Length: 94
Image: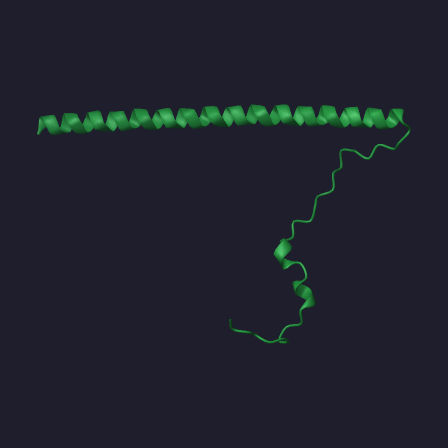
């Protein structure tokens, strides 16, 4: 009986270590992704500033500002559905 308890304890400890390793790996991956996103945002800002500078040098108005318009998040499949009158048309079984 003591051997079974020891074996169960060792198995549990092994599973715990594997789980901790997976958690640490996921946290590391998350941290790496966060740093990549930050770098991309900084690059975007730099590119927008460069574009603005070039446009100002060419006398064009700067189209970029801090107030970005949100695009409509409508489902493309729902477009045009309001044009179909309810109750009209035929249902065709194929």
